[in-house]
Length: 585
Ligand code: DGT
Ligand code: CA
Ligand code: CA
Ligand code: ZN
Image (tube, rainbow, N blue to C red):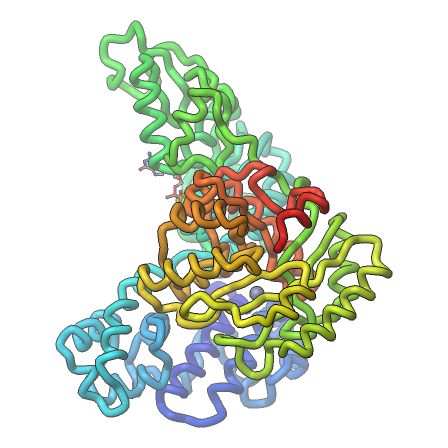
């Protein structure tokens, strides 16, 4: 048995908490969830500590006492927790899948199991379709409708990893491989090289004359939890929840393999057809001139090999410039390359500031000064504090009242005076279901920048959502429409709309559309950014940071904007301060 990772341990306690909640047990679920959070956040593998007799470390975790620590030890030593097994027998429901349906929590799962025998997503869908759910006490037609709308989405999520989680792992994998003598070159491929917002698996490509030695060293890497499969030139392993595929090729074929395994599949299909029309043949082994070949399909290596060692060479063989991986989604990049009109994509160095960030005035972790100091350390020229205003979607006193906003503006002005960078006074207002932001003229006048974001009624239909967002875009007070869809990757689909329509309105109104760089959001996303800037819209790449460290989320935002073909001029926060000021309300 492979050693349990912290992620795996945490998942067990989350399941435990959900099953207890489904069983209507009080208090315990919350305790188990807290323990799961502490386990996840712990920097070193707890299982190794337990195995080497350092069980005391468990009790230092927040929310972990004798009982939970005994269960951790039990799981590490036996691979199961007896109490959890009993609970699973008592409640044989696929709690993880069922609770992925928006609006369905553990308690609902418990009720629907007891009343209707619902155990799986299929059972849930069947019960909703048969109209059985509305008959259960406490449920109604609205719940049933919700379930029918969201069950399909729940089926597709949960299987993919967030870019923000998988990319650091990919970077670690590269660092490990680069340290090996046998490795001449290595690169990530697949969706992670294209910076897709979610990742099915991590693909890694190595150039080496000694494939078996590379595979062996890969399998022995200490981060590997499980071997999935292995052969002489490739291997697949599991690291935490992520599958990593390694492929080793000879250096002479590295470029063609990299091009092939980067995808996307649609890009490759289009590129191969482009090649065929030019009497060329393209595959993972190279680019081949097949002009003089009777049957180009006779084998993989027919014709004269003209490229393959480098990826640039592969595109060059077709008369094309190299195409950045973020663009390889078959959204017009091959035609643009052929016409010499590829965008000059922005880079992180182009970003001069962050326009949507939080402090402990609302739900951030630290004060204004600390956030500003962190922004200055990143080399930013300007920085906007945009804490939450009170309003729809803000609960538990998180949002600031108008009086508090005006107080905060004064403090921001003081910090600005003392700071080497320009600090702008902003707010994150709430776009209500009708598109109104609910701020008085006095407050609007006192602020430099207003981000307006939807935080409530995120299950509106497309028509209502579009009208709502267009109203906010057209509001002269609004400078940036924050996380326009309100989606949470793997959790919530959010509002749906035609991004070109929003983009056209935003261009007209002089409102920027946000690419929220939080890896759980990435909202807007590549295709939406492309559609919006195609209509002349300006975007803003903001981290929505709630603590200094997450200002680094800008990395995910920049690559997401690149997936949307963004050039520096398309991005508000690459502009000089004076240009930015002229754009604001
Ligand atoms: P993922 O892992 O689901 O996030 O997406 P990808 O794009 O990483 O897909 P993956 O891991 O299945 O394969 C990596 C790349 O290899 C893919 O982007 C294109 C290439 N590839 C794999 N299988 C095929 C195939 O059957 N046909 C073509 N044209 N390309 C393929
Ligand atoms: Ca992949
Ligand atoms: Ca793969
Ligand atoms: Zn926010």
